[in-house]
Structures are given as structure tokens and as C-alpha cells.
Amino acid sequence: MGFLHEGHLRLVDRARELAERVVVSIFVNPLQFGPHEDLARYPRDLPRDRKVAEARGVDCLFVPDAAAMYPAEPLVRVLPAPVADTLEGMARPGHFTGVLTVVAKLLHLVEPDVAVFGRKDFQQGMLVKRMVQDLDFGVAIDIAPTVRELDGLALSSRNTYLSPDERRSALALSRALRTLEQTWRGGEADPMKVQRAGLEAMHAPGVIAEYCALVDENLQPVSRVTAHTVAVVAARVGKTRLLDNVVLGEGIGADPRVTP
Image 1 (spheres, rainbow, N blue to C red):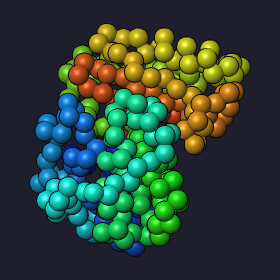
Image 2 (spheres, rainbow, N blue to C red):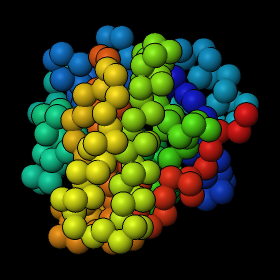
Image 3 (cartoon, one colour):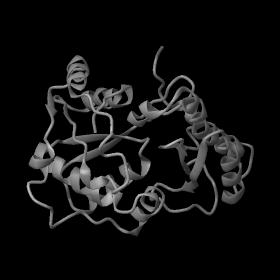
């Protein structure tokens, strides 16, 4: 949705590895925002986005406006299965209907051979992959690793909302993921006990934990924690909602970092 940071630009790098031409779409999609969410204040800086995209070798920047994407109220939308009502879907009802509808439109308009998404939005990535599979889209979906600051905070456009104190408190999310991983590597495989350790690690000033879940690649809760289990967390830091995840067998240490 624009306000490009290094995490987005790593997706460009990955796309460059997979294709001869790279198209980046920038569109702040009103369908995926709830009535009391941050659509109006979502960070935007298109002139800067154009410069950094060009510098990274983007061949085409596709920047439609809302009137072009939705000339009329859409009568047909992509309605995902109930698994989309868990985790982020529970916190943001209707969010993934908006996400999948706009992704379907963007894929049809651009007609890419491959589309690259970031793993930070794990649930979104899995739902996009299933939509493409279930509806027979002619595109491959590639999920690229999360990019983090050196202290572990996952890059997000919404990080710009954080005050310096909130920025420090936001490290509770990556700290919780490390705790989940360490608890599992220490020999604990009971999801409830591993989850409890993660929730305790999320305690920090100004942080309200929203969920800490252990799921498989299909977003189903696991009965036993393994190397393939995905730990997903979300919290409100001040007024800002942040989310993060890690595959326990890979760990946060395996993810690429922003270089100084």
C-alpha cells in the first residue's frame, strides 16, 4: 500500500530474481479498512515511493486511484472460507474479503507470471495462495522472508506511527517470538505451555497483546509444536496495531536484516 521501506524493496529484489520485468502496485485499498481504522491517516508519500522504486530497478509503477479500481460499489467480492475469520480476521471483520478482492483485481489487471508477498502478513499470504489455487489463477505466488531492523522489529509502514517509547515497547512482539522458539527448542511441545510463555514475554509498557497463536501452514491450530509450526502474534502498541510471525524451526535469526 505504498510508503515503501526496505521490506517492500526486498520483495522487488526477489521479483527481479524470478522475472525479467518487475511491476509494483501501490494502492491504499479502502475495502480492507474497517469504519474506525486508519484509512485516512495511513502513511502516503508517492513522490518518494517513485524515487525509491526507480532506484531499485522497478520497471513499472502501477498506481491506480480508488475511482479506477472501484468505479462503482462492487457487487461481487471474494469471500474467503471461515479460516479467514481467525487471527487478523477476528480482530478485523471483513478485512480479508477486501484484501482478496483487491488482490484478485490487481492480478487480473497486471497479469503477472509471479507475484511476491511478504511473510510478515502470514495469514494474508496463505489466503492469497489458496485463492490463486482454488480459483485457477495463472500466477505463481512467492512468499518472501520478513525483513527486520537490527533489534528484531519487523519492518512495517505503520511503524512510523510509533513514538520513541512505543518503538522500544514494540520489541515485545519479536521478543515473544524468540521466547516461543526457545521454549520449543528447550523441549516443550505442548501448544498451551509454549503459548503461555509467549504471552508472558509480550508484557511491556503500553503493549496490549491481542493474540499469540501456534498454527500450521493452513492456519489451523496445532496439537503438538514442531519445527514447521508457525507462531503468530499481534498487539496494540499505543494506538498502533502490529503483527509478526516466525516458523519455529527457522527462527528469527534466519530472517534477513536491514543493514546499518
